[in-house]
Length: 452
Image (cartoon, rainbow, N blue to C red; front, side, top):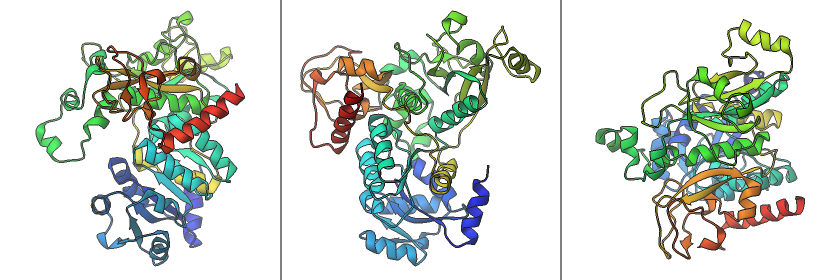
């Protein structure tokens, strides 16, 4: 509750938190919009493969084009920042090498995200990882790497996983038992077959809207087909110690008033296998009709208490409960994504505390299955593409069956024919041994195996 005061003190002292941002897409642009307005924070370097796009994104977010100057390397970038301007570079590794306190990784690309985070952390620079796709592949390793070098590795506040972690932490701090936690989304079973060609139609976007730009069909398809939900719930599980169910996410159609009834164990009349599950509810039914009072943009936690007195208080204070009154839910209907990133920046730099991190280790995994029947020799095009969709499973099951993590699936070549909905295993594909992400994943797997 004191972050704003602490930022103001840094501003008064002329010692702003020095920030580097990698990635100027939609999420990055939202971050830019608020970094400009935060007291006690200085954006020192902005990195993007397309410097022109990055400058345009910054201008659209309220910055002056003159605030940015091209820099060829870290030394030039540091000189630019000391002169009071923002260095514009075309390499995330250059940004990670600059004189900064916090690196925000927002490329959305697993390989790049892991590399940039690793390079920054080994220099003792805190990392706020927006690229949750990388976190679910090697987050536990990056977290350990951060601690080794006296840095903090953190989820990005404003994105749903970090806000879910906050709700879980709130409930546990108060002494409640967390029964379930998760988010809302739009999902129907038919979306599993969606491709980048059909995603926009399911969202109802018009050609005029799409023509305005900024619409990434693979990204939208990943949200639609359930892959992004699996990624986010695995991040939550690894951070909080909650589990993902063996059978995957339910995507149960639910209003906010249904949460306390549905998101509880089956033995108590709910739909979950047991207490302590990360799960996702849908704003639409199987026929794609909308549920009233849904949670499409929000997050939730369901909880109970062993205290009969506390349970009575749930109802007395107007909370939505199940019929017994023993289970209740708290939810946040919206999240502002990159506009809220300042909480993470301030928390890691001023408190040395992440807004969510994989403290629980490798507890869950995002694996992939074929969207359609595929032939030997075909290439898997990764998250949100034409070939596969992602599902969440317990990490032990993924290890036992040697299933391929979704984050490592891009560009893999099939070694044999497979049917639709076939879980992709290591024996089905050939890996790119030159991948830095794959190298880190092997290191993480070795650490996990040694600990088991």
